[in-house]
Image (cartoon, rainbow, N blue to C red; front, side, top):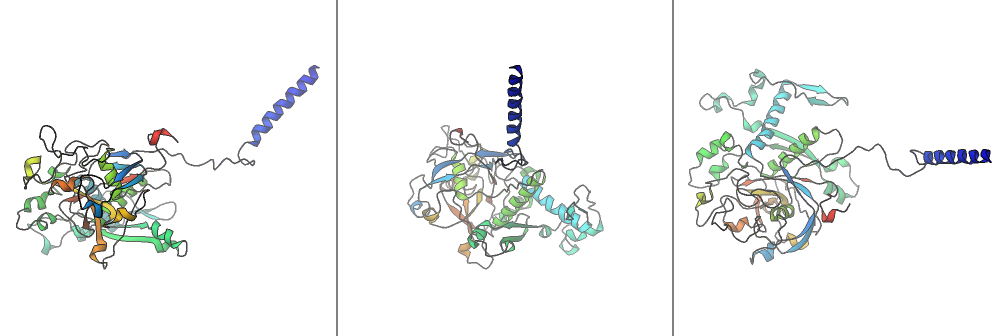
Length: 416
């Protein structure tokens, strides 16, 4: 009897061991790829998470024109991260300095070869700006004013490329991948003369000379940028963000679509006219709630003659500053009058990369939010406006978004 019990116990142990072994890797079970890298969502510095949601785009104050260009429509959006503030002069200066230094390193031959045989800039090497080899980066003698040694901003060119997924999807595999790789070359220095060009018979020379370079304006929104320059900044930001990651996943910063912008500006408040929710541009104490053009042109009444720091005034419910006023903001979207009538109701996106020889109407890009020089109408979150993509203005800046991967637990009840 004891031998029988021992035999049965041994048989049970063998069965358990063998059954455990069968569920292991490589023995016929569907386990998925087990050596996949781990991933965890990381909120970039200075950005706020805007959760997934549904809202009615285009609704707001009664305005006859909205029935032609802002017809109300229910839209659903995937969550994303958005810059809490407009991109500041000092943040954009980091981009300018990166391009400047990369050009200097290239001229000096500061390269090393990686494990795959690719030449890469050795950023550890210091740049000797007194080196005569770099003289071509500075203005020549006939262009120098007052014997000042100044860098030629016209040489600060950023080269980048991206893959046009929409064109590839339409092609359905008929063309090689190289057909959809778009390459761009963009001069990235802000057009500081826009402060003079935008205003006829107005003396703005001091701010034109100092706005981007003087430390007093470091925390003010960068302006004087075209739509391609804003896109170049997003591409560079993606490059430095992904450069420090160990995995191969590529997160891409970009401009928000106009619908993403409006959804974020509303701060989760349905049918809000302004980011703060109320229908008025002043609070109960009579204080102005944004930087714009009050009344008939009392510019300083709101505290600023021109722009103000990017974190001026209170943020909306999502933690976003100056979604109305200060500077208007570039979006990713092409401006089409009746866009709301035919765009999809799930993550709508109407884009067009206009060529230089395209008609002017094809070059219109949506700008949102109104600026320091605009009346209150343009500050309403549903107001659509546009500017040509190759035009730089003293009242247009931008902020970036980063799409969220997966579904956050604070989206729609916390389900997975």
